[in-house]
Length: 203
Image (cartoon, one colour):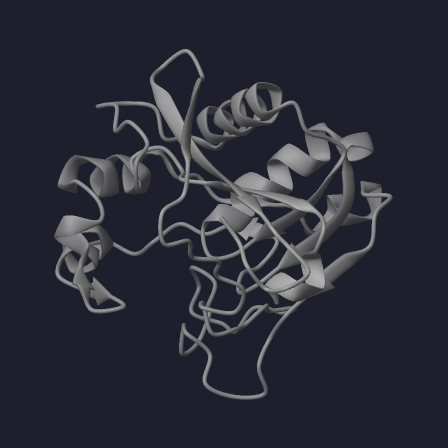
């Protein structure tokens, strides 16, 4: 995957409350996250970009792309629908009891972040607006074994169309990345600049 991106510059964003980014007590709406992406793009002085998103970050990537259609050369989505999905009651407590890639969620996110994400979520659909994007859109989904067993609407009926994919589709890791910090007005948002080389090395 990294070889295929050479010699492009890759910037990986830690969303607010995750990774090396600040975790403010409040402010986890779509608009807050879109503002963070604006800050990272401005700080990194990049654009137009090939935008890659997966999991809940897809919501924020879609919102950012729709606000800046001329700044997006392509959009790749790994495992989500063109919506902001409202989690069920009790989701925050359940989420904090899980682990991801062998690391407990309590070491990845602070409890208040998960509860604020759940509190700030409202149902938003972007399906009708996808045609506004002038760029190519790639949706990656498996033939079986979706991360979410079934995605359903609030009424319990299956929703269509549905994006399903194992959530580790296009994850980039770096052994010792350079952490940059961009201010979005409410804290520091971390991003990693990854230089992709043709020989497979990255840093």
